[in-house]
Image (cartoon, rainbow, N blue to C red; front, side):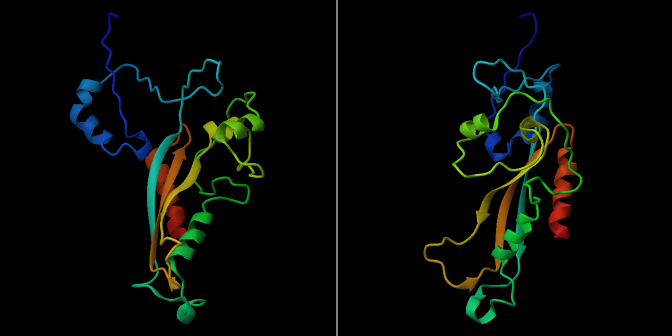
Length: 199
């Protein structure tokens, strides 16, 4: 080709690429390049060629709520003593407004050029069930490509089967924040942390 080409296949993207920073620190000189092409995007419609020029970045945040030193009986303490799981549920519900937009101050959001992406196509592509409403405001392309998205992707909680009637002393959740193009991942993470601490 008359140029050097380096191919890096990285298989940890869906779990936050935990070893990628160490790889880059250790072998960054061997991976230096004039152009970086990521090949994990999708075409927004089959049969329509696409070139993605910006992507939303990703930040993973684990939040833990602890209200008690140990589990206590809900019949004795419920109604006055907060349990961690209910408190965590209330905390994560504060992350979105009534329309489903991310309600964290300080996160970037902009408008994307509208394309002929219809709600019907999006619902079919995502496998949405009948009766489930879309979330957020603005054009679909802006919501998908130029706005932050914040999801609860895991919760540590007792299983329903075999659970007792005790107030849960601590609970954790993992949040997946998709950072809008142009926003700084560390600043966006800090904004979410400030929001969680304030609530």
